[in-house]
Length: 118
Picture 1 (cartoon, rainbow, N blue to C red):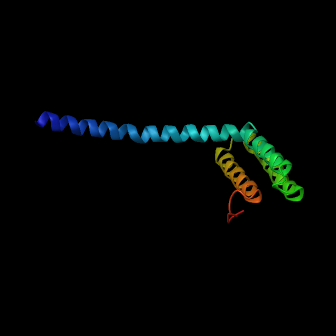
Picture 2 (picture 1 turned 45 degrees about the horizontal axis):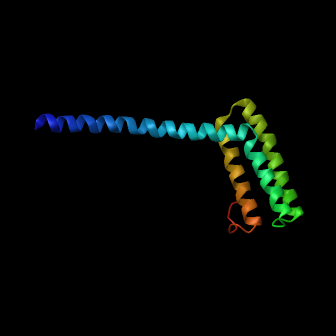
């Protein structure tokens, strides 16, 4: 019986030892994918494509779209600089900013309620 209890403790410790590493690796993978989407220009490109679609559909007026497009362009300039420098923390903040622009597009298109902070 002692052997079974001892084995259970060893297994629990082993599993606990693997859990944080697995979680950390998954988080690192997500962060790497997010940085890749930012640095490749994919995030900006998708936002501009979405913005164009919303204007074509008449869900966002051209004046508002111009302001959103200018915000994307300014962020693309920062993106190029930070990606060239390899500043991963700044790249993460740029990704968050792209997320806020996406929320802005959603709000203007009537898909979400206005979100504070934009």
